[in-house]
Image (tube, rainbow, N blue to C red; front, side):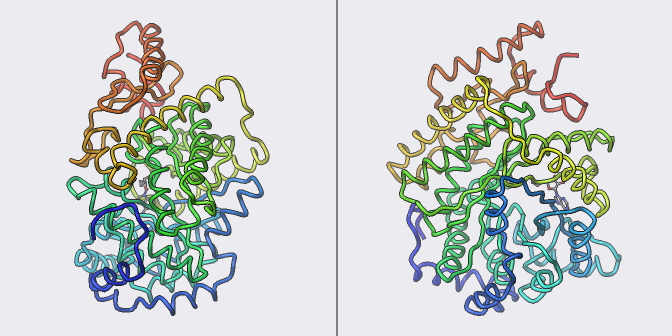
Length: 483
Ligand SMILES: CCC[C@H]1O[C@@H](n2cnc3c(N)ncnc32)[C@H](O)[C@@H]1O
């Protein structure tokens, strides 16, 4: 299959599908016709797309945790605990790291050892190994819409199995589940593999089953300038729309300055709508997701709740459709179900207190929306030009040339030349552009904001600011002021 920005034909899709289903023995149980019937038998209350659209209409922000353990019964117990004791509005199944690398043999061992140890020895739910039957037990035994959340460059088999089981949302994308997650997986291959996933969702849509797709907005979650993550989100939205996906949630990882975070969500939603319209996708149901702080967390649980609540309020004031919840165990590792539920309760408390409130506009907010949209346009215009009108080709070339450049990404296909740092009010700015094609005016604007910080701190604008910012939140502040 050659990469091109074009909807796969059914023949192309089903031809590749034969190979995909051979990836593990559980693949043979996937039967799309049966799966469509099963989806249609599910109550509307279990459909992810519908719950998101209802929330958008009502102007409320839904809360969703991350969660996943090795064994099915314990996973069901965990998810229901997060529903009943946490108050989750939507449920995940966070997939383990072996599955994310298609190492299903290791999962098999992990499942066996977890049974012997009486606790989860995998850091998530091994959906491929549990197969349609096992994953369907999770769908049958829980009461909220379910989404698979992972970090899988090749998620074709995983998506086939868990969507057939009745999950109604799938997180990820050809950029967002490669560049921040993999070291040397070909970007071109991942883009093709995620076209497969989007085409599968398009097939479900064409057969009357709405499946939500959610590109992974935060990327590395480390000082990613909003225009860079918005550009990637819009690109993955276009890639999905071309394959027939209709219900799309575009995401953004909290950076920490409230005005910039609200501006990022507002810019993302309106600019994505502009691009969908311009390229002829007139029936996209678009929602947004705000990820609570994705960087280093304080170990102290009270401080962690401060970070969690701050993220909840930013999500609500931004008017995001959904907020992804962190836990007070973030600095330690996979949270206990109690800690996970506590993070949701704290989040829901803030969402309820702020229900009906949105950050009203202001000159500062309007200016930030304008800056973010203008920067995003500079990047997307260049991607389109490099691809000669083919977004998919443009993405590959844009990463080769550092036009798309995600800070602190492990991928060897990412240039890593652009460097960010916070300005004097904590907004993330471009400190070094690398080859990110901002206009001179926008580049000068970013530098001017950073110079203000330099003047305030009595030091030059250098990469030391970036380093200080990376450690700041873990140490209890937003901006990494010199000690
Ligand atoms: C974007 C992924 C990183 C985030 O995903 C959380 N995460 C990963 N695996 C699990 C799990 N099995 N249960 C609950 N949270 C989980 C991490 O803490 C981090 O915040």
